[in-house]
Length: 418
Image (cartoon, rainbow, N blue to C red; front, side, top):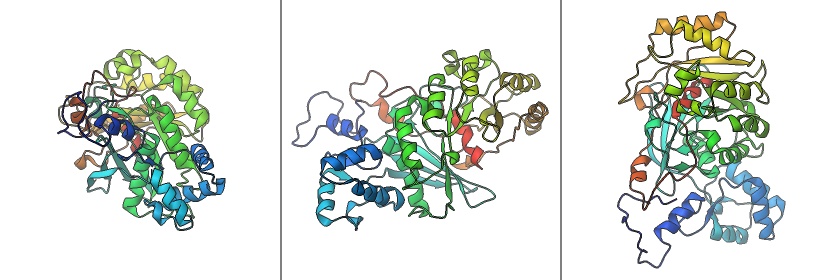
């Protein structure tokens, strides 16, 4: 990974004339959750690894429980505030570790109370996170990003116009939810289970299943009952269709699954979602049929953005009903959210209702999920950070700095929690 730290960094491969760490050292450390001085972020370290680290310091498992509680239950951001840990150990920990948060570079609230944050990580890259409050109850879902940018270039997606910069680390993923909690003062974790930030949806920037291990570790931290304590039943992961990882995700995590479908046949899906050329619909549907935990009580959600004159005809609805036969699923019909430069238009409301009725007549729930946060570009498929600008100025870069990404078309799923 060779991203520059700032726009003004010198575009040269010559060693920097300085006594401290070089720029490449800093960027390498940042990608692994380390500060400029080499200290490591405790946020994102798995419980198992934290146990090993404490054992290496001669500390018991009880210290792990204490640290976990301070970081993920109480939300502290300073080791010095961990008052039931001895001063000597706090000082020792502070030499090698810190408790981090991304830097907020933008904080916007929509007229409909949707809340969007632009978060900057240690290497200067950014990602967006969105909170969508429930319209009827005092709760809501936090839509979290898994990558900076994406590579799948889905035709109807704003994030698809931003090239992939890199995968996010487990700490960068889970800390997005922690920043949201900071913003709403929801620390310590409510003991009675009543909370405004009640759900997590992995449907922001990036394809979660192309960054699977990091997403898995982040969600396990979020689900841990002694910390953030979000039930797996309140977590949904959306994918554009990375077939080999779908069943693995169900076995490892058991979270809800949403599929960014958007077309009923391979020809159309190939055109608007290039990932379909690698993982065609038959393979995708087979993976869905074998997804662990799928049931009538917990169906898979099929996200379907409504594009005028493209995928919204009655024959498309009938083909969808045939395609998903044998999959316990429901549809979310998403009116297309216009973004600058897009050639697509949204299907008229009456036509969306007719489309929904056809699916309903075939036995499938198909609610229309009306957009939220449009005025701050926080609605489905509208997320995009400024990190592509940094990517273009990378030192000696010849390709992407991480794994593959997906279109933010998967943001269609965020409204499923409303």
